[in-house]
Structures are given as C-alpha cells and as structure tokens.
Length: 194
Image (cartoon, rainbow, N blue to C red; front, side):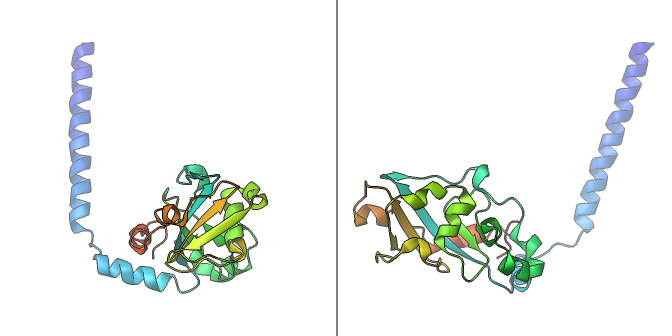
C-alpha cells in the first residue's frame, strides 16, 4: 500500500513538474524580446550623469596585484543608484564614487568628475599603498605626475608601481588595459548599463 501511494505521489509530482515547465516555456515564447540595440539605447538614457570606465593595474614591489575577488567588488549595479546622480556627487564614500564590478579587477567605474586614483585605494581597502613610493604611466607610456591625485581618464589606462622595486617601462606597458577590454567590460549591462 505504501509503495502504491509513493508511486502515485511521484506520478503526480512528475505531471505537475511537466505542467510548470510547459507554463514557463509558454511565458518565454509570449514575452516580448528586447533587441540588443534597445538595451544599449536604454542604457545610454539611464546614465546621463558622470559614469565612465578606466583601466588600471597596481604593481607592488614588482608584483602585479589582483583585484577581481568578490571582496573588492561593488555588488549593487551602478544603474540602481543612477536615478539620483546628485547622491553620487555629494557622497563622501569612495565606494559610491569609484569602484569595480563583475569580478573584473582592472576596470574601474567612475561616478564623480573630481574623483582621484587615491580614492580607488580607499574603495579597494588598500590604503596602506599611499605610504609607499609611487610612479605611474598612462596608456601611451607617459609618466603621470603626482599620480594618486590625478583623475582617471575615460577609456584611459594607467599602470601604478608602488614600493622600491620597479619594473622597466616596457614591462609596465604589457600591463596596460586596452580600450577593447574596457568596452568588453561595459557589455555587462546588468551591472552598469553602459
């Protein structure tokens, strides 16, 4: 008797599962599909304030640092807070002003015009780097004067060296983030929409 009840239960469960799958498939077929072009257009309209992306690499005593771990990420999408751009502008929290997404540890999202690279150190929780000697070059190989107090440039890239041990310029250029890499990171609409 128990086996019969168990078999009836499994049969009912199987039928219900099939109905649920069918219902979901029907919903997907009848739901309007958003064309990629519409998504891009929406994303551009959504982000009228400051919101751009820049590549960076931090090298400490000759070792390239990795910031793609979840502990370095801003978890809420930029687009959620973007409805109130003034909130970003007025915020003193570096994590609101400059941050990382999608476990991409070398493309920074900038939300405030006057943000500096030093604020990224605070946002990432690596403020101890401020106390080390620092040099930096841009994506054209030019030395950046007073690099931590400079603003990140849209679609630019900078390689920072912290500490006494430094690498030659040719080696540093290998660590530049290309514009293509930055554009690829922007394709992740669910986290920034640009």
